[in-house]
Image 1: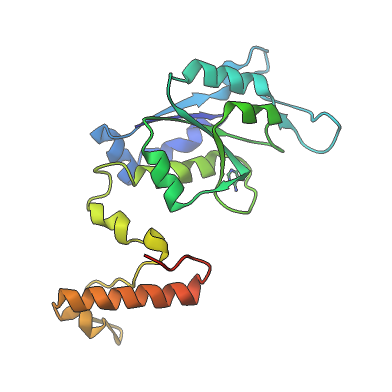
Image 2: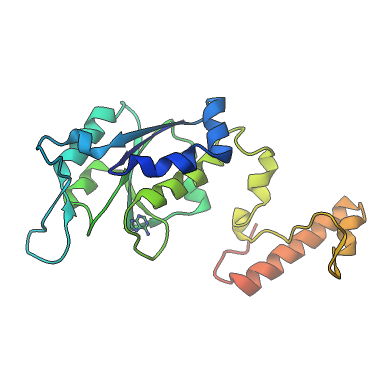
Length: 223
Ligand code: ADE
């Protein structure tokens, strides 16, 4: 999968994309990320990407021309284009999984008070990472890339890992433990040391359901 990111801060992505699992995914060739500086698609000497809003009001709005030119320059015949925006559909496991199935993805990072509304005609969907406003779309884009990358084949060690983690099947993940068996007086539940896989699976399911009901009753809770 190739992801093209259009941003006015390409340098913000380096630390996140050049580390850990996302780095390995790129080294393996499963994921390719190309960063594009939106200012490269301006034609004035100040390389301006924003302007005052029509109708007045505070702040600046991102101009449509550089964004259109950038997308048109990058866009292959088939691809999905998303705009990071607090007004978008909330990012979810199913959305990340769905986007991981596309071969080419273009991600546009918004800024300032927002993006000229006409940019919406250029994108397939707008994506929000939650009901709060950040200073720009870069952090949300990194969150999206990370969430999508985890579903690419071979990125996570065990395929099972994405099936059992939180939100898979509408449930939070069961509690996890590792050694030592007793730490500062806190013991690992006996059942996990029993070696009885069926009992362990049953216990985990009950824990998942109980945890979800207690902490996130809004989730589906089904399988
Ligand atoms: N840009 C600013 N805030 C955002 C959010 N919550 N989600 C996506 N893009 C954003």
